[in-house]
Image 1 (cartoon, one colour):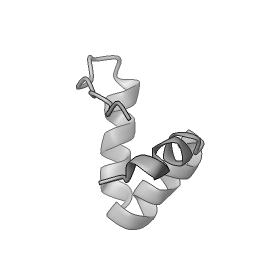
Image 2 (tube, helix red, strand yellow; image 1 turned 45 degrees about the horizontal axis):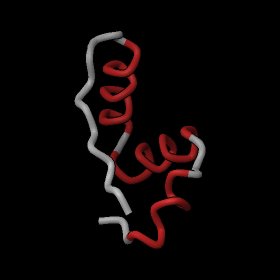
Image 3 (cartoon, helix red, strand yellow; image 1 turned 120 degrees about the vertical axis):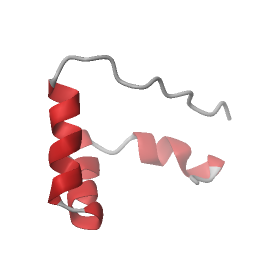
Length: 52
């Protein structure tokens, strides 16, 4: 869980940095599955961001 004081810093990261971290930490298969979902054009789950 992201601490409230770190939330804005996290959201400032570029997407390529976040995607690189996903590949490094969780593997190429997960990253490829995520990319396929993002590029498919289908509706993705809605995220309810915390309100700090």
